[in-house]
Amino acid sequence: MKRRNVVGKVINFRGLIYAPVEENGVIFLFSKITNDLNMNIETIRKGFPDCIAKKYVGNGQWEEVNIEFEFKSSDFPKHKHLERMRLGTKCDSIVCWEHDWQECPKEIEIIELKTEYKKYPNTVVEEPDKVSQISDYNLNDLFKNYTLSKTLYNELHGLTMKISGEIWRKVAKYAVFYYSPEKVFFNVSIQKQGLKIHLFTGGKNIRGVETISEEGNYAQKWGKLYVKARRDLPIAMSAIRKSLQLIKKAINNHENTGWYAEND
Image (cartoon, rainbow, N blue to C red):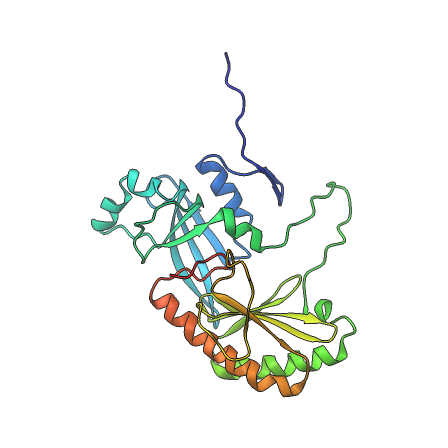
């Protein structure tokens, strides 16, 4: 009897209805979030590694990233790729649906799509002949008529950019994301009565920063704080500087810094 299609769970993400069940699905889903990851794909090919990409790291610079696609990260050693790396072939990242390889070397970055895609806004799928109402995101979309919040944000942004010339920002649908430059270390949501800031803590206590998850099952390495008046800016800026230090240390130690990263 002819085999029927086997599909994953429903995710309905940017035109992909079901979760991947093998490597081809991983490649397709990854293609849907490359812009969110600040990457451009140069080539996808047979052989190892599967993909060559460029990742924006700020100051007009792009860094080459060598990527291998796997359904599960544990497939990487099964496919003898570690041996190829020992012989000199470079691989910087594994893009997979599920990360289940506990012994993965720290120098290999893991992008687990099962958790990664949830970080980004979904895109409405419209009929091809319909004029889209979706516009490019800009700061005015976030500010609305929040005069106080706009003033606070502009001051916070100016102070942030003075910390380091490497920092850069990206405006998204609901927030502004700040990069270290390699990774996001904080984001700002513009609210009616001020600013809400999520920032990387590495699981450390930072003055003025609250924990996000009481249950501790997500955002264990992230915290939040609010800026409702100019008097809140000094504490916020102190926390942002500390967050930048912590994420740079985490990157150097090849630690997972994502929203679902667990404390060691």
